[in-house]
Length: 249
Image (cartoon, rainbow, N blue to C red; front, side):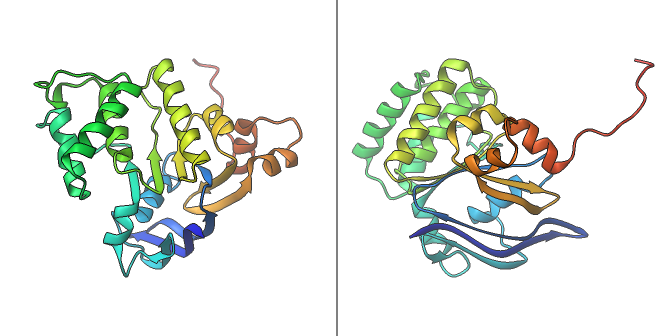
């Protein structure tokens, strides 16, 4: 089964085409690195795929379900870690975990068990009285990932999950994500850390000004560029920095 399908998807905000006629298909168990410069349309694409916004035109299907026809069914099957995290800051971590779990229809025992396991794996042990508003940025990232994984989603979307994360936790998250893929979970990851994409993602999609510039396996993409790194290939595809005389610096 295809886990993710976009067919001629466009999203327009006023005069700007944030996503412009994008089509791609991911089989179940894929791990896609979705890349692009700032403003290329990555976050908008993730918001479309997770049902936060509707496309101006085109069709989105996840696990064979049409997003326009049954978005609730899709949201039961996916997990999302947005860049802005969207946490309820006036709750404690435990309260937020239970709130999200109940929204997913999970029983209290399962929420407690899975929450403890994820907290332990991510070395997250905040005080039961500490509100999320008082968490460090890295702790907020961890609780966002915990709630995205709590219901064992079949498709997982992650927007900049490694931003502000220490190297030890980063290694743990990588191991978790690779383990999920090996068990058949489909993952879509956006990040500006291209070394992470090279280590994790067999599939690469590159957006530029809202359009799909490239959709290839990493091996095929690298085969086109000889010994070039993913960073060099990316810069070549989307264009490097502009020239200019900065001798005054």
